[in-house]
Image (cartoon, rainbow, N blue to C red; front, side, top):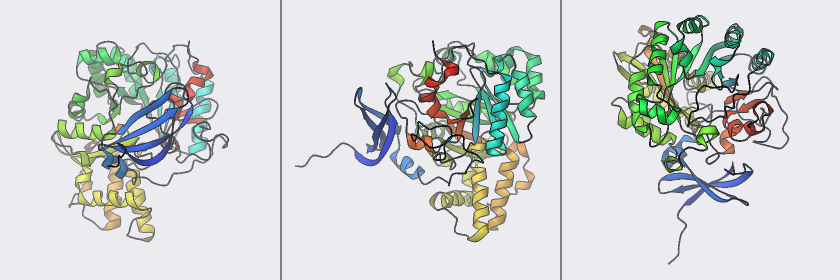
Length: 471
């Protein structure tokens, strides 16, 4: 009797060796209902990484995409090819939706889950910062958001000067600060100034248990996190909570974290980040628990741990690669009661139609306007939930199709009624795929003018950055 391979070949892929980081050819395999990336390094041997725990979701997600939007200006000419030319070159398939500016590599925590290398030896100059901000505007014209990160950005000696400069730019709609929140928790005057500057907070918030903070962040931070949120509510700081989810540690809390977040009006959204095993912390994290949590896993966890979500409520965000982002928007219909927008039949049918063809069936300019409305709604740029934008998008969808959207009267809902859950999956050296890099819309902005796709920078180019040379 003939013997068969254990897996089915799906496609060719490009990746890197998790040891030496050289570019490797690989292949995507379907096996036992899951999706794997297999690759072989001539020096370090064979590697296999899980890409998805649900092959049907993974294959279907590939239809959720949109044509890439061109920036006004590219930063780099094509030379060696992706991912060596990251910068962005003209071969890159998407403009910059969510730029990240790392203003330092100083941090007062040593987090076991950290995906960067904080050597506490770099602080960006104000001149470099101005050059980056002005360069972003030159390349994009206008930006929905810019995220300041680190290290811990609030420890920068000129943090408030940086914030004043970037918030003065009318071309930039929102400025998020990616922070552990300790300075806001400990310094009320700083919290007031943070609010007065009009900044948004992107708060690391992994768990509701102190002992889990000890394992993921090095010490029990629960009281500090709660104090930070108390200040954010007091001074009306719009807040996104960002839990890093690690298997064996806090995947049993995703439902509790979503429920906790949506009890508070000032928390606009939750962005779950399944752990990536890269960086100073992640690359040395416990191997026994290193089976990655995939997009499909997160959908299932949220569905089983809440009584108001289904895994079908989550759809890939079409502007990025479908395995990078998925999301669901929710409408608050009563106290502590939310309905995902995908439950409204009209919205769901439009999203399905959008996923499977370049233009929708209604024809002509109406189809293009409708598609633009849906893209605007389901976009990585909406990570902080611009409620007016969601409201306007929904009304446009209804108007263009003369549909009732289940007779929902959107006019009676104010901006505080919309929430969102995002799942943002970073790659590490194990599951790194060049195809995802090509469609990346989350870019690190560097002083030399380059815009570096996030996972390309973290896994390849960060190790070459002269500013951040590791000891």
